[in-house]
Image (cartoon, rainbow, N blue to C red; front, side, top):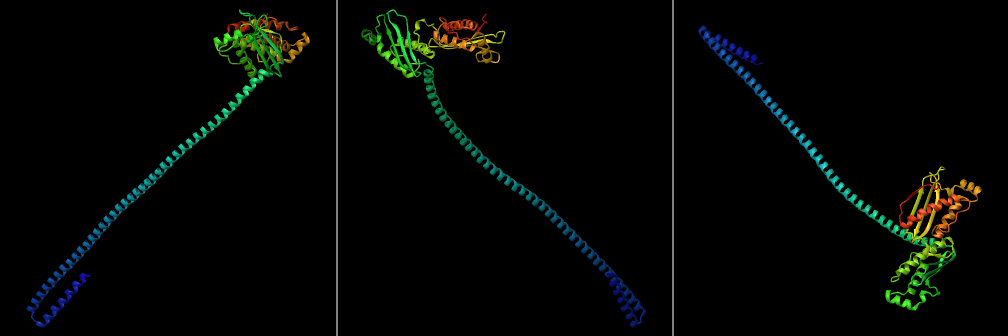
Amino acid sequence: MEMKKVFLKSTLLLGSVFVLAACAGDDTATESTTEETSSVVESVSEETVEETVEEETTEEESVEEETTEEESVEEETSEEESVEEETSEEESVEEETSEEESVEEETSEEESVEEETSEEESVEEETSEEESVEEETSEEESVEEETSEEESVEEETSEEESVEESTEALVDGEYTAVSNEDENGWSVLHVITVEDGEITVSDFNYVNAEGDLKSEDEEYNTMMEEKSGVSAADAMVQLNEALVEAQSAEVDVVSGATGTSETFVKSTKALLAAAAEGNTDEINIDELSELQDGEYTLTTEADERGWAHQFTIVVEGGVITESKYDMVDADGNLKSEDEEYNTNMEEGSGTSFATAVEELNAALVEKQSLEGIEVVSGASSTSDSFLKYAELLLAAAAEGNTDPIEAELAE
């Protein structure tokens, strides 16, 4: 478009030159004019070209500037975008950081809440533990109270049972114990009366050959009271009352009358053993073996039929209170409880093993020694074994040796 404009201007100038030349009619002028015109045209043309070039250059520069500006703009835009991107990234990072911080804050808050919750739970657990401990303590106290009450009841029951055992086992009757005369001519005379299984009367005293009672000897009682603080008469009254109340030989020693109290306990145990068997024969306590308290046990190996002997005696207060002789097999079955064996033995000999050992055990408690124990008719072999092993146990009781005895089989 610019080139066309230049040619049009040139054409207009040439046309003007030709018009002027025609009017002047002078060749020189024409030439001059032509030359001028040509010069002008060239000048114009050059100027035009230069202007055109300048314009184009300007345009190019403008374009370049615009391009540069655009590039600059683009660069700026790019930079802005870069900045924006960076900003965006930063914002993104910040957002992420913020989110992280938010998460951390939430986590921190959660942790804080958890910690608080944990602390609360810890407090609750401690409270729960304390409550549990309190409950357990309360339960323990309750159990202890109940246990205490039960123990109290058991103690009362035990006392009642003790009384019942000491009374229900006794056979009604009058039982007497005596002793040999001492150096002063006094001997023991102790009589108890049992009614409905209970001791209703206890009369312990000393008597001489003339039949005088020590409790009525005023001179003796006065001398004893001055010396020990208690008379023989008062001591005996206290002991007799204690026996009726306790229904057993477990009575307190009377202060100042130790010897009398010990003799009273010995005669009482002998009388209770006799009353348990219903034996009303007079008992001489000096003829009883001097046995030491304890439980004495004997066993043997099994015989050819698989039966082993087992024997236990119990001594309390120097008196045999229990005698338990029997035979046992490898399974722990007692021969006295073997119905078939006892039936066959009774049919063959007239007595059973169970009956024989029952009589022998009762005789040892009654006699307190082997003297006077008779062989059970129809059970001579059993009686011989009983007497042999009883002798070993009484020897051990005399020594106070409670070690179990392993004896050989009786022939």
